[in-house]
Length: 396
Ligand code: EPS
Image (cartoon, rainbow, N blue to C red):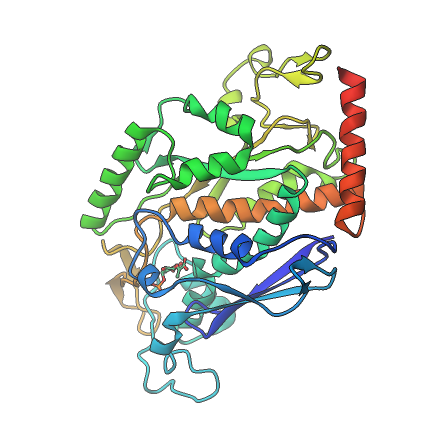
């Protein structure tokens, strides 16, 4: 099974990731990894840091002649900003008397609890590891599973349906077409928008809302729509809590910085309706085989993929580093003060969509490996093709 860790501070020398359990024989190019890193750096509302960084991953192990070899893949992404932080983030030399300590926590951030939990006298180490800079390492790690899945006809994409007050009125008409072509088409279409939206009215409203929030020293959150296409029925299982696919996907998504809500399909809307208007009716036979004509379940029933596109929605709160002061206090003196500002983005919802895509990739890859098994691409592809063929035979 695929597992991975990331390491690195936002203003340290580098971020890194070790990805273990990838089968052998996955074809990989630098573009597979670096194009995902570039996508994550985009989006209207990013701050000054994005002008400093041009994220590129160095691959230190696990590849030979452009293919995985079954051994752990280690990835390194250097922080170009590090050269400006060698004193503040010095690893060995003690500069604690020179650097000014940060002692005013930002409401909504890890600052206060991290400071207390780890026994610091300065919030800096909390800021540096809780920072969403870490998601660059997650995206690099996830890009490997993403490439693995793509080579098996499983694609991942996302778009943004809400940014602050700007929301699409209904799912864009083009969505169905994009999903029919595979979720990578959805990702590509969203990437053409500065806010990764498909609806042009919502896009214009979102850009204006972000600009206004920026002017007012404020921040905005939003809603991410994640889709996975090409997943056959039967990934995950209802038999045990820790084998449920929806649970694993939800955990992966909510682990992303500032994501506070996850929904499978239109779950919250479904809660307002009677069952007869919620459940997706079943059809079989004819050329189309096994199918549903609606997808309110978001492609998962009984915690297993049902063959429909998997649809996950994620709510991101507004970033908690804001110029508009909120009431806080100084941890050194207990004096009531207004919160301090730390350089940040004022909206990172578009980037968080790319991160969400990366987070679901290893979850789906593991569900595939659990169902099909196999240690190299040739073996896995053969087994998956056979399973898909068998389903086609039974239901057409
Ligand atoms: C972040 C704060 C900002 C963002 C950062 C996330 O960084 P800095 O404090 O260096 O200005 O730019 O995001 C990234 C660096 C990135 O690569 O996404 C935070 O506090 O979470």
